[in-house]
Length: 90
Image 1: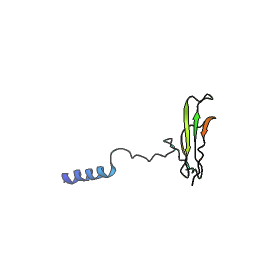
Image 2: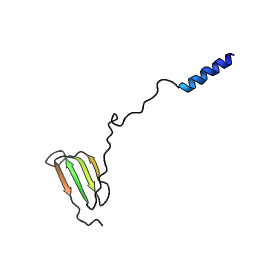
Image 3: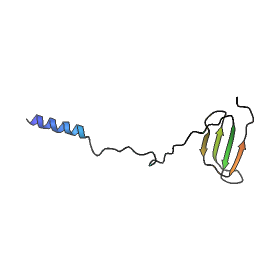
Image 4: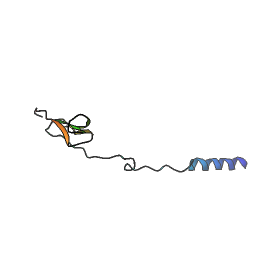
């Protein structure tokens, strides 16, 4: 009898687990951003973004290479240098 009670208590304990359940966190709560992929089509360029007009501190880049997804890091600012690679994307 005693073994049956202990077995029942163990079975219930295994079914309920320990402590409260963990809820799935929403991506917006984690600060994640989902962005649409932008394609380069028939263009190729690199843009470097700087923190100041003197173009000293690089704070971001944007790279586009023939028919590939656009790749961006850091932040965009008004102070930029564009390297427009002039070759044909075939």
